[in-house]
Length: 247
Image (cartoon, rainbow, N blue to C red; front, side):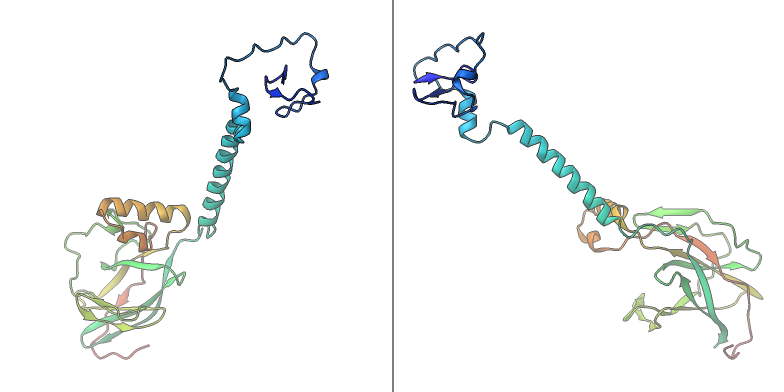
């Protein structure tokens, strides 16, 4: 047996090149000192790793790291594919009329896939460009109630969802629009409504995981999350006499 001067691997006497590093024996540098003969029963670590296919283990580990990084970036781009809307959500009033002593207002959101998070009455003098102070709860952002301005008679009559109910009371199904009613207490009112777009991409999943942590449950994984709502008001409604006809 003859030993390779480069890697120390033992080869057959008639071998032309090393079976490990494939260096030709007569091409080894003249000043390379022969490796000391290993003790009886000793095995070259490099040769062992080569036999096991792990000689480039460190390089392969780095390739795994790079691959995982590329996969993470690709997943982030996939989850963010919806992008963010630049336009602020709003409200479009479709009808306002009086019925059975109540003022009834039908409206839709703009864009149509935005969601209504809250509804309340404000006086006609309310500055519609002012955003109210809000209170935040896990998954919800509501306006801080203004003292003396609450009208507890306000209620939804119809929602754009089949089988919808509030407080056990079933509501009518009106695709694409909401209808609410209230008992007038002043000559004119505005309706202030919180309108929010659905969250998308990575922020959506971050919020779901945060809600899971807060509620100590996995149920929020199936919820849709919303961005902070924008509070918009309708035009002022002059409360008509009961029994008024629809416009």
